[in-house]
Image (tube, rainbow, N blue to C red; front, side, top):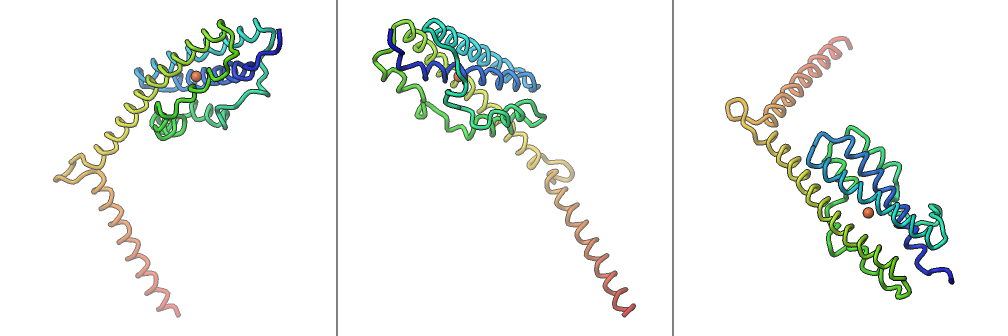
Length: 200
Ligand SMILES: [Fe+2]
């Protein structure tokens, strides 16, 4: 049997799905948001299963996973992993790990997978399931990312808008405090200037 032309595709899936699992599971282990954690873990399990499924298929075809030859989906994997494990908020992690939210169906990366007409039926069946699951995972993650963004935006708006004392928001009170500090500093500077003038 000649060397299949789609080994590179299978290899890249195996490598990047394994990384996806580590990234999502790490984030799941570092969030207090139970709903987000459940989705991250669900998708992480899928990613891990995909990694093993395609590693196994490569084995069946007589080849091994080779990370050095894989297309790298995560350009700065170590940086992303550090972010996932950090104390940054989930909204900050969404901004870094999930981008700006434009990763919708119009950017579907799987459209060309079956352009290779030599794909054998067994591999084709695995790829079909893989693609459908990836698209479903994408929808689930996007829904959670949208919820996390909206929650963070609402919380930020509350801080600005929430009436506290005499109808003033926390934000307005902080601004007043800063203005008072600046005025005091200006008075101190003016007094110092006078002293310096007298000394001359
Ligand atoms: Fe994936």
